[in-house]
Image (cartoon, rainbow, N blue to C red; front, side):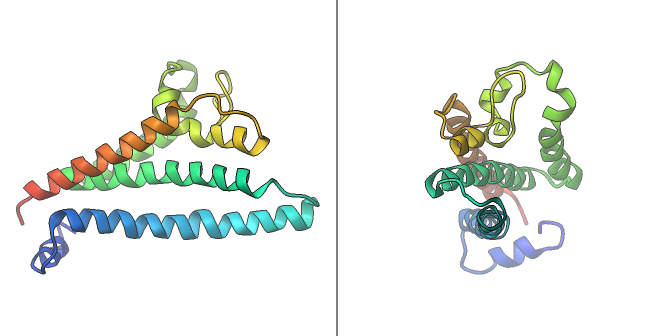
Length: 172
């Protein structure tokens, strides 16, 4: 949007720079929440009922979906922040992809504390450490740790603040 002039055109209207970032997060977040989480979750829940003969209690299922949405919103807010601070498409695409695939590639060499501060443990099992928090919710077990949830929420807020401040300093 910076390269094509779309950002400059939007800012020529009565819109603040913070509103541009927040509306981007809200609209993409709603799209992700509806298309990636809710619609697919409803289909999966229906298939579990029809083909499996039973379902997971709805409240536990909704909690696991909330963790999935939080993990996806982390990657969205990270990408929006990177696009606000950089003009490099490689950086904006490469850093999130590296972080998404990092646990699979470097699992044996990663320190255990990384599972507590990154959103990986929300939806992905740390085989040697603990099951994913979403798995714990679905199984009716207590959460092993609240730290991944808290650190992911704090990270999303920090990414949003950094994106807004960086975008406010941008010249068009």
